[in-house]
Length: 172
Image (cartoon, rainbow, N blue to C red):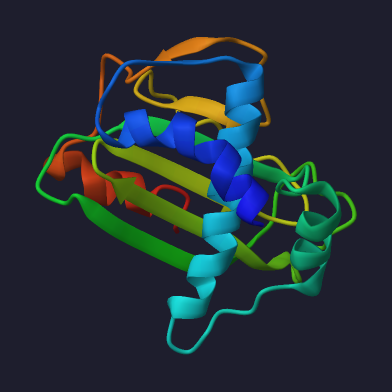
């Protein structure tokens, strides 16, 4: 996994410092791999530890990226929390998850929000289904890739007043 860390460092470091960065599809894929890894690793800091399904670990070991059913967004942040984490073990069901029943849902999904310097990200990892898009121009989706190149940071960004809403997105 140190390969993921090493590949992401030249991409994430300028973002953390608030510097303008061009994110093409390969950069987004590298960033998405790093974010997914962080979402899995941070589950071990929860008390009690949130389950980490073996299928996630196996998938990362083989593919060095998050499963295809995961979604990730990035945005800018300008506020008083230079380091912030909010993570949840979630169960969710979606209309397009025909293999899942309403009663069982997708157990042990990950919903994680990160702030590191001027960089913020949201990771939504499940076994299946499609979450709704956040509906804000302040966030860029990096997983699955849209195929578009974008310039970070976005013109609109998070601040202290909007951080709670960002972290609570997708919680019901």
